[in-house]
Image 1 (cartoon, helix red, strand yellow):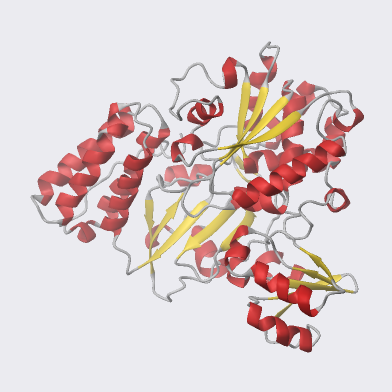
Image 2 (cartoon, rainbow, N blue to C red):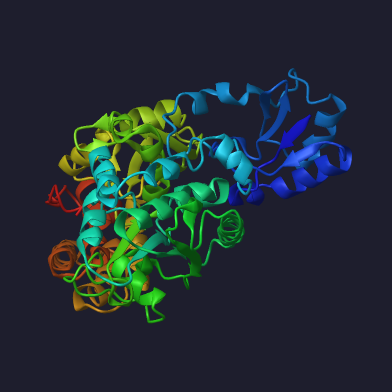
Length: 517
């Protein structure tokens, strides 16, 4: 018999370590595997037992439940038994490509990784020319999953075409958007997929060094990544002779210092060079003049971790998922006031309403949905009337929404949208790098103005001032932080003026293409 207890940070926060310790104490002869999470967080800690080659799930399991589970021999008729893991509805109905291994494998076992298809993509890539590799990524339709949605193949092509003695692959693992955790999940549950993707990126563009820029709040990810990199080096997948090819790729983890602005690629590069995390003027683009002035690919964790499956299964296979120019799958992170929070991977095009009501089970409170914020703290608030919107870049842009990193945060009808808008703007002020005046000064003046509106001090005049400030920030800021932080405020003003104590709705005039710029 083999037991699986997750080591994912969210499962740990719910007592997974103590659950594992009690199983070890009660069943000392049983093999215990600390796997990653499947992302079904309302069932964590999710404990599994493998019998006759099939894994049976139990959850959520508390430390106090362990004794009863052991006494009954983890029987299928126990109240916590969920049946075969693979048959759990919330898992079986997904299109898991990037997260195909997450939860199923021991995250640090190279044997386990390869037994589930790991390094198959890299082996195929080693037989291709750099240009053919870039073409494969371009044909897949893969776009950045960090927020900007820039076509990955075009970025790789730019770096490949540059002539330089040194090029770099930088992974943006500074996952700071509210309601997002996909990067952390893949790093803790399937780290070799990220490593493999970065190696392929290096081979495709001529880069021989890579850095994972990891947010300081992810110590568990740091430990898993460092251990995985060490094992990959020992096995010859990293270093001077990648997979016996005679080609080099070196990789290391760099810890950030807790600045949200370092999720912006140029501020990240400044920090990586040991400087204060402030944005750079563009042009030049990082692909031409990036880390230490050299051509640099900067991709998000999920973008890079998706690369191996594209090479393993083919660009056409991946591109068949999704719709229009939104190809492949999106890892949706469902959070907030929701009955079944977690990570869900689907092809683009799933309606928000189906995601929230059918897959997510509606609000945890049982009250009606009032608003949904997609794309992190810079994303506009959507109303319950907008939930028929399909989740794709094109549909979201048309509906003045933002896909971003795939975060979806739900609020019920008890939420005060004025307070939420105020919080978003204050967050923008705290996290501003300070380089440009519209963002540095505008965010502070904006949340002060919101305070006056909420207090009932000349609300109509202050609303006009607030809208003017937001317009200045949108058009005058140097980066997306200042350019997008007005959208939660403007959308709240447009859809929920009563929460501000205002009469009548005003048109926020959110440009259709701005949120995903």
